Amino acid sequence: MSDVVLKVKSLKVYYSTLHGNVKAVDDVDFEIVRKEVLGIAGESGCGKSTLGNALILLKPPMRYHGGEAIMDEKNLMTLPKKEMRKVRYRKISIIPQYAMDALNPTKKIREIMQDLLKEHGENLEKKLDIVDERLQIVNLPKAVLNMYPVELSGGMKQRVVMVISTLLNPDLLIADEITSALDVSSQKAVVQMLHRMKEERIVGSIAFVTHDLAVLYQIAQRIMIMYAGKVAEISPTEKIVNQPLHPYTKMLMASLPKMGVRYNEIKLKGISGYPPNLLNIGPGCRFMGRCPFAFELCTKDPPLFDIDGRKVACWIYRSEGDEI
Image 1 (cartoon, rainbow, N blue to C red):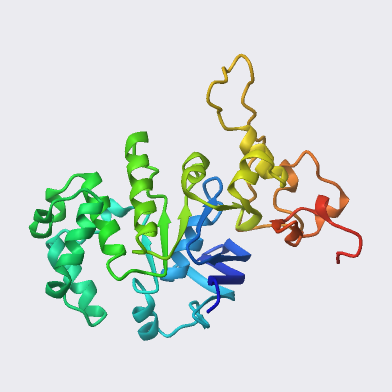
Image 2 (image 1 turned 180 degrees about the vertical axis):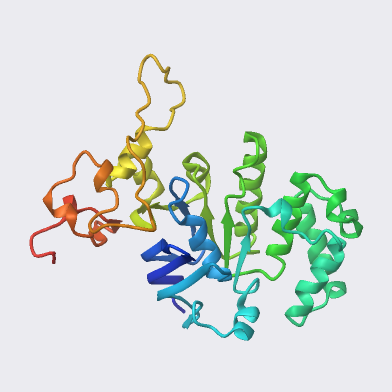
């Protein structure tokens, strides 16, 4: 059995608009291995959430424009709807970005769970012991099963969604910005819950999508940095934090505050300029206009170079013999 759970190659997912295609995910390559937590990070609009959602459900105006996402030797992007329904939540699942609004307000939590299980040929009554265990992991009483979403606090709703998303023990769980609306103590609790679910094999691997690198430092083994719909760098977490390769990653890390360092000692460095318009992208590296190291070769789109097992899309790391 291969250790690779998901292999994404040359994936393109665009948003169709009246003015053309917004290239939100454009020629993206990466893979996730078993028992791994891969962090997917980058500033707002870089395509990280689009990537996570496209793997689960392509909803208009989102459109698939090429490439593949292989799971169990099947391309998720081209699976017929009937087959994808069998895969969704069982093989690959998601805790959505707006988890607090993801629950049907007209149904009790019990009914929502029952509907999901029925879709996959299972019955809630036979899984009540498992449901009870999952509720305990996220510190919720069994009584929530007989409550409507409106009766739950925002934090309780999010934890209920965590239980629902992992009911079928998915091989891969996508956690999309699930800590962005939480305070620091709640963020810690959510990260601990996810870690426990992975340790207890409730989920196999996790793709943790966030803009918060501090959160990823606590849970991810590797981090993929995205910029303007492209992969900038994929490296082990410690390397991203302490020895970043890509100029964007370096500038991103330099813009983050550090514990125990006063502002008057080391001032934070922002990244000047703005990301390119994904509706009308010119040729070359997408970070070229903001990069202090840009040179003539940057007018061509860089591939992902392999540097000691790390991946970086920057011409600085081109070796003799690499194609241009």
